[in-house]
Length: 144
Image (cartoon, rainbow, N blue to C red; front, side, top):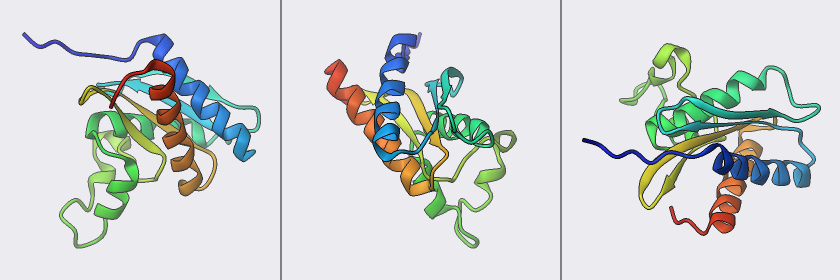
């Protein structure tokens, strides 16, 4: 029998708060999604002014972070023509994202979820997602 750790609704809210804090600091209205370890959506927010097109992008970034257990920016580097993972971005029904801004969430070395942020550039989205994780670990006292 497997025992699976998973983010709670409240813990997902902490990640959302961290992302919103950074987005406000950056003055970029973001779309933010948090999934469980299986890539299923727990929470989603679109800030006033967040791009409508970024809704599904943020969700796909969170999905990828959770199920692939790596940041989407890593796959952007690996998914180039001629590289072994080229084409991975069209798998999983097209939900596998290679755009920076999606990260896995680990607690005690175990995957518990994913976070995806979208509406800025890929670099800005990545900064916001990283800030959300930093905020989460600081507020909860949990360790990656």
